[in-house]
Length: 189
Image 1 (tube, helix red, strand yellow):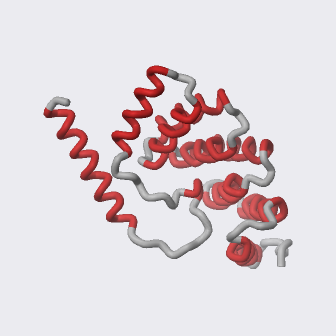
Image 2 (cartoon, rainbow, N blue to C red):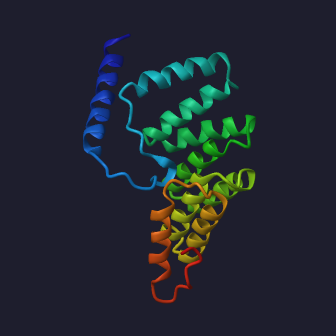
């Protein structure tokens, strides 16, 4: 490896270390949109290069496409993540996890409508896919200002996923939203 390559890797490593240090400790809550509670791995650059090498030899390697997409997702390289997720979904269109992560990338790049479309596709393939239903509610409420639509998405999550681990906190959030002026009565009590 040449000297510029070493300096580039050290610079990326320093940025990743700074990002990890700024994350801090979080109280256990319902998952954030996209389920992004995993810390950024410091060896992400090396892993990306490994996946690139695998994909040079086998461009349709599903696990490598998902793996590199996830690394791009984790490092907020959303357009690169989307490209790899699209390739993975061309091979396995029913993968709700990949479709949901791609939706979050669309949201982060300022395209909530496409994110909603992808989440609805994930839900149509697997009605019990909790993360896609949760994220749909978040995007409807926060990006589209559609509180009623978001609450309905979360109520559908509770209906379709009775063992949802954050059920009580989600019910409390629904009740809070329903208690706002002009909101209809809560469906889940």
